[in-house]
Length: 306
Image (tube, rainbow, N blue to C red; front, side, top):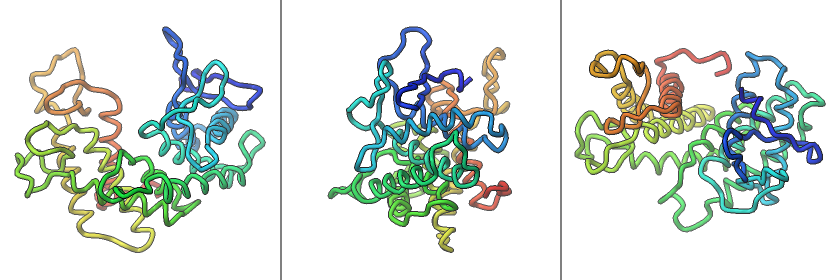
């Protein structure tokens, strides 16, 4: 299905993925290609090399969208395939780094004419990590305020076996240490069932996805620390609280006794206890946090790849 969304630019030598049903969009987002590329690369051990030509075309798109300083153009003009100069978008740059790290790993282990040269991908990853480690958040609020940078932590963890970068890893660790201040605990004065959630006290109902996203980032940070032989008991304690909150938010036959029989939601997550909308990302992020966080706590077996 994803492969069927490709839009090719033969002269440029790359492709993007764009959902074109209905009125075609004018611009394509970086993340709309980077995130599916992560899926193609992550699943390649299961699918084999059948999508390598597309992986190479999407990878060359990310390389072409990288700015000279190491960041990325956030959008592309779909009519021409040229970069659209504009502000950055949340999540997209971290997804691009993550995808390029996985591509670097593939080009090192299975080089192919269908893929960009390993040296080119490696250099792009280095420029990106340099930028996000040194220039991206270089201002007086560093350590006091960050945006949503979860994907950079996932990229840093993926890079542990292929492209370690102390500054980039430090960016992830500093981000998680900032974000942990927003996870509610026993001192927050909230209802007990809200402990472990990402929120702002009893004023607003905490949403499940930001809570799960923090769990994903914390699990990645724990893996980065473990790679250096470091373990912090406070990380495991906090992860336990986050996962406990997420498990309590999961729909089950018991707490969904009044749900419509026509809609099967048991096993999934809605937006929050105050919003019953269910989307795939609400469940995906929670599932990922439980999987990676559970492994860091020793509650689940580690996969063959770690």
